Length: 439
Image (cartoon, rainbow, N blue to C red; front, side):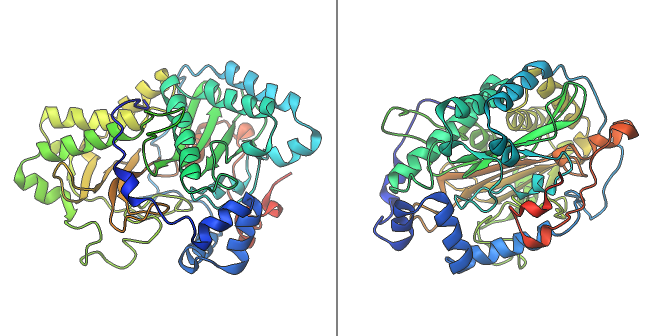
């Protein structure tokens, strides 16, 4: 749940010079002009190079994140999770009844569309699909948020709204609200809202990306990304808002509870940017986390220790961490997915990068055949701290072995109801290309 107390203001000593060209561009340009300049002028070069690499990854057929390059079959099946699908369908149909034919054309994609995979978390509008909330009327915007509210748990919805508000707060700090604000997010529908057939939606923008697949009374929320820089609001109408502190506290508590021997095995690198890291293990954008945007097919080997190495109290902490990462799920689904995840305790690994003192920034990952969660303290992107700091956090969740986007689940759907092919028709032209849309 989003925390509403304990703000520190520690980030304020790292406020940037807003007179630099980057922030002046954000002040003068709208989101589309800003993205166009980024794509055509290749500035900053390192981020544009990453974007081009993302485009090459998108051209690969979807396989899913794996530990060794081989997809493990039979891990996912249809189960009635008690999702109130009728309420979600009603909210989605309410939106569709309000939009124009032109808006519906940009809002709605085929269930098979490879555009599922073109979400990203920078402030750059790299893939423009769906409806961007800050360009809509208040009524349309509220109807989109009503879909989020109907789909997510109350705590998960509160967390998402807090992330959006923090994004707006950051935009105010750098005077870049034309590009980055509370509603600088895109909403996309995939398939037709239905209580009996597969469909879903995507909501994405800076530091908040949610991919939702729905089939009858089951839900998949994966992949998702949630971040914050800073992770608090210390002034204005939303003062007191904080997020991602429980994920931080539980991870550190688990690491500190381990014996020195287990800490040594768990700590795969001592430094946040360690010379011992192989090439590619750290990059300027993702830094330490491995499963972010466009990393749909990444091979992520198991590292660290397993739950079997832990005491019962430490295993309970692992359970609490996974449960916190399942916060977006409705309560009934959350309980079932947690039980499923914990059934793989002997194959659930915990790994760590960095120190584990009370002030140390750190990274951790919990990884099993059915879930991967990552936590990472980052250096500044908008703030000017050169080293990772506890006020800039990235978190994410993947469902490995083709579980992302509900892909593996669809193998359980009778043949006449199957939809996904995941062949990127025109993905070579890059994210946001509407030629890849299947009409």
